[in-house]
Length: 168
Image (cartoon, rainbow, N blue to C red; front, side, top):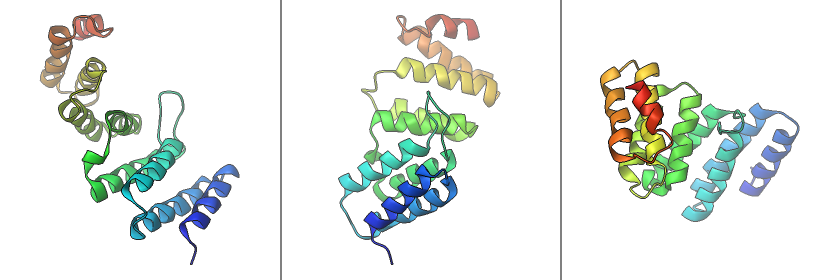
């Protein structure tokens, strides 16, 4: 039986060698062990989100294992509720799902971002993303119109103002 430090070290070694599948298995065991041994919420969140960053899709690179990253997001949400997320973390989850082509789940997470994170500074961008996803991925033109209108009516200085007007 390995302790959590050993699991993390082995997972990192396998990842460095390019063996993503074994790294995923070991990182999953590592996170489970952290939770089971009650290492403390802040420590578990920091460690888990660091692993998510390694495997999730980002705007700069394709994720090594985006479905595993989503599994970790879901595990955090189950153990700590979505209150554990900050706005940027919620955005990363929604974006990862979007790039995985899990459009309905992505829309749900983007919607949660604009509804539950009042101070999130890029709401205009999120409403625009929601409009694009609604129009072209979910084929819901009425919902898309609502999101594009939100950008036009509430965010007149947005870089997505003209794009929203175009899509209307």
